[in-house]
Image 1 (tube, one colour):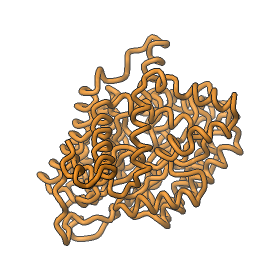
Image 2 (tube, one colour; image 1 turned 135 degrees about the horizontal axis):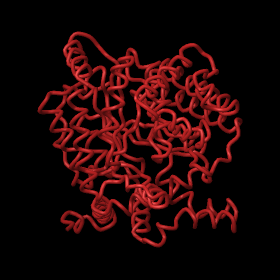
Image 3 (tube, rainbow, N blue to C red; image 1 turned 180 degrees about the vertical axis):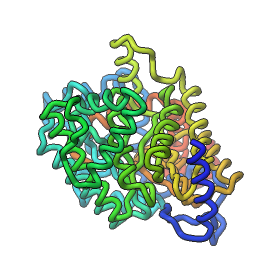
Image 4 (tube, rainbow, N blue to C red; image 1 turned 30 degrees about the vertical axis):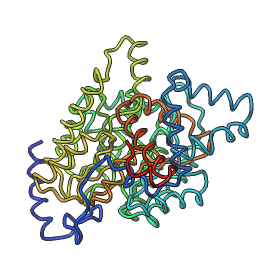
Length: 467
């Protein structure tokens, strides 16, 4: 790990003398930004129409109904089965879908990107595609279509976004069961981790779909499927590097994450020599998150020594993780409570801030105001250039944080999923659960929405002193 610190310190010094791959933001601004506050409803929602405020308020209130939220995915699928997609569309398109999703068509997505960009923020596009173990219904044609959609997102991002990022789920490019199998091989030993990362990187560089080192570990079908997945991922990374787009690989459920890391680190070894093109995601609600990021950073440092990119999140699979652990008799992998998760998040963010520089970028993807303020204070105290650290929130959530951050000159990304209504049902269910679970932030957003609506709808004589 000391090699990483030495390299990052050298790169920080050199950054003053030459330009680098960055977020397109200077640490100095020609005009003084307004003071950073997350309490100003006028500032937070001035780009929102009254209908958008009403919709957001209705969605938040619906997310407070525990029976509805806990069974949201089953209810949505029941509506689809009994009433068809037309009924589902009537119920969800103008409500949950438009609140949290960027669109179904390229035209809708471009409109969303323009809207977010007009508010001073950037879009991090995310095609909704994933599968869990036991849910595989994919065929190679579907994986190839998913790859095409990701390549399309790269083109759209490069054309419309400043310092573009995209995020993707690798479970949309190969079967979940194969990711589990790859993860088992990857975690067999520290030596196997390094060999597999190097083998995947080698296949990407040599443009070969034959993964020869798995000759004894995987059968012919598995080797062929893995080879095709590596080729698809290679095509995505090559296009992204050519278009100067960062690729952020989403973390998923823990039984998939080791396999995801093997592929992600292999791609990083192949494409991150000059700049952090491929980033991995670290879920801080997992007790092992700090150990994991240090191990993976050390693996890249000792093996191939390339640039490092990280997306730091809390996590969105809590119910599945705890249920899986209970069913399999495993220890609970999740931090004991929200406070413990916040402590874990802040610890890892502080560690990354000691390394932030031209060769180490990260995005603090969080809605937690305390964690955001901690990152900002550390950046100011240590004079860390804003081009190495960015912030991210989900589209349709936490605007009272995103808008002020952007106005204060920070790089702020909205994670914007896109896809058909049926494709995004699991995503919509997770957003409903997240709004239910993060009560403090949801309550504050609810209160600010109410204040803004009162200001707009009540006569001006009463709107000046809203409690």
